[in-house]
Image 1 (spheres, rainbow, N blue to C red):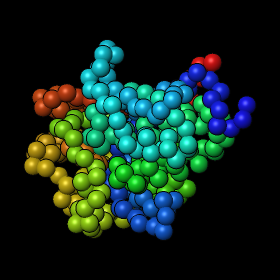
Image 2: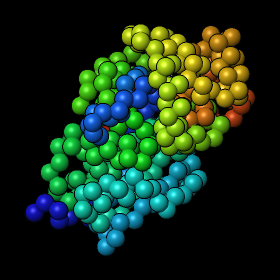
Image 3: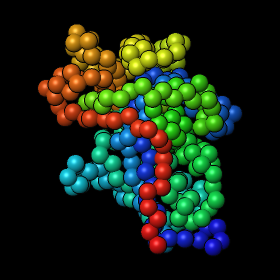
Image 4: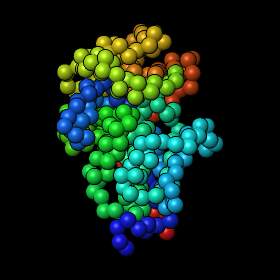
Amino acid sequence: MRSGEPVAASVTAYCPGHISGYFRPVTGSGYRTTGSIGAGIVIEEGVTVCASPSDITSIAARRLFEDGNVREFLHDAPPLSYVAGRLGVAVHIETECYLPIGAGFGLSAAALMASVSAINALFNLGMTRDACAGLAHEAEIVHRTGLGDVAACQGGGRDFRTGPGIGADIRRFHDLHEPLYAINFGPLPSPLILGSPDALSRVSAAYPEEYPGSPELFFRLSYGFAQKSGLLTQELTDLIAECMREHIPASMTMLGNGLFAMGEGASDLFGSYGEVLKLHVASRGVRILEVSP
């Protein structure tokens, strides 16, 4: 079968999400050298994508309840249309996730990684794993939806990215064995921050230089970064203060109007404020789930 012709009726791929604890934007000479350095956690709760051949490119993005019913539906996702156009294919892309969109869980990166991987397999494009990640990262940079999430979600664990782009060195720690808990108070659109020079300047100045060698230190550095960056709302500040009083490591989901925390105590504390999101650390990155003939 020649490259560019569909080899299946559909391909389903999955990519984990990512919570960024702290980061520093890096502007390079091109997409491969532009992104961020920083630290975060790759979470198993990500995005499933089903790609199928179509006469025109179309997108259906669904956020689901735990029982599978649709909670939120979007008819368009410009970054996904962008990658289809860059690959020169017409494709119908269906995405599904459970976590809130635009809330700092790296879902745009996960949707892009899974979509490019599925399209690559569907049309026999012969792209390497790095090439798929490179295009997904490019789409994030172009649309200002993220800086380092694509690089992080190429693998699993707690990540520490020491250079920008998908080819930079990433140290991964597999030292978080219990669930994490998060709460979200609404969207915090990434383009509003990633497109603001003043906001990015504050973020860069807040970046900690210490090595996040343990989960406890990672949370401490993340909390310090959140404080200094000017991104914390009063609501989040008050809730983090409660976490500190209860000795619960916690920080802000970057970039989202919410918190993530470590320990069972976080579930009880967050429960009095709203819906508690239970998260699990991913052991690996993007993968193909199914090829339907």
